[in-house]
Figure (cartoon, helix red, strand yellow):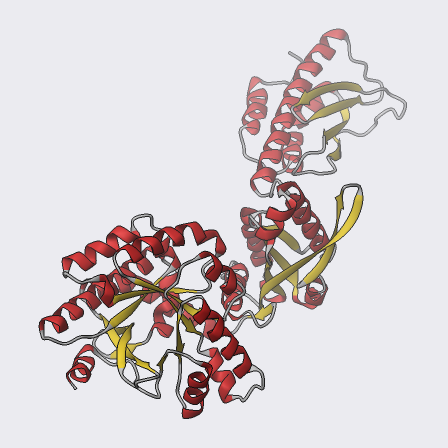
Length: 558
């Protein structure tokens, strides 16, 4: 081995290969430090390293990187370099050594040089593959944008620079993308996602801003607050060209976004967490497409998390209570039943309505199902008690969530609760919200048919709040339909067409042999209109607020 070269130097070079460098550039710089003793021994004036990678999902345009390191002065400008190259999976590494002026390498020296060069190119190959793997772990394979890990790393880098407060997080979600996928095919859907990501990318400065895809049709943009308007030009509406049967068609992509500005360097991930939180809340509102973070959201979310933790214990301790709101026959004025509404006796201090803790339930589908069955069991116990007292409570309705209806055993569970308390099905009605998706029709049909076999009625709640009502009525055999309380508000506001709408809805439902209940009736004016429209039953504060079991029992006695 050439004079001055020590085995420990060679070992150090190998050891360098085992260190984890995130980029080829960092690895190259470390290797060149290890090469200094070799350059002295061999008279290497300069080393050039060329690393190239072919296009792939993580480097759509491929990459070509050139490094040059000078070790000694006095290189002959006309000397030819000694080149060694190595190929790896998706590219190659080429290393060129240039001697100092007057130095000529004999064959034995060239053999040693080749050995060292092979070591270096092999290590660089490993570095390039490692760089690809790191890039893959931080990149969405479909769009080439950053993924969730890429976002976290980028945000940490912003925190290290102390600039997070200068940025805004935008959590963006495409509207009705599932429907587009179904109608146009997944291949077109993938194209739309890539094009939407590209349009967002065009609005940012990639040197200091980032666009990421977080799976599905969810995107997250980390943008300097002063450039926020650029992104908001693309959201909530943009058009993407799609080729169909040889013709370019412009497909409109509608989206909505949660927006949070001015995060903390101590918590850079607040940009994404608060933006996502804001979007989640905004989607429930549906009145607009751009939702800006409000401080009170944090307390709401924290409260919901507390409720989620406390609800299982509340069920065990029977802190959830059924309150009963009477239903009144419009022709006789007599009570014919009631709706059971859940109330939470929260730590014995206050009585919480569902509006306060319902969102906490929605976060945990298992909890929603448990509460539904718990309420059915509580109602059945009271019905049994009243029947044993010789009181007829009429038909009591209980709400079932969509999560419960998707449980294949829900009918059997329902009947087991009735059987435990020896309750005839005629005393029970299950309310299902109209917003149930059409995907559930087959499941609902099976459930409704099973209920009817036992004499249990099934009603559609909140009729008139969505677009699927008529289709649901066509495909499902409901006994009862409850008009949404928003109709009552429109009566109060004296909207000119609301009476016509209610009257025609009621007539259509009666022709389908469906009973109609108007809920949320609070004034004589509302009562007069729904009576005139032909509603069979009314429910609301005009007659009675939801009352605890004892009060309802006294009402039954009277």
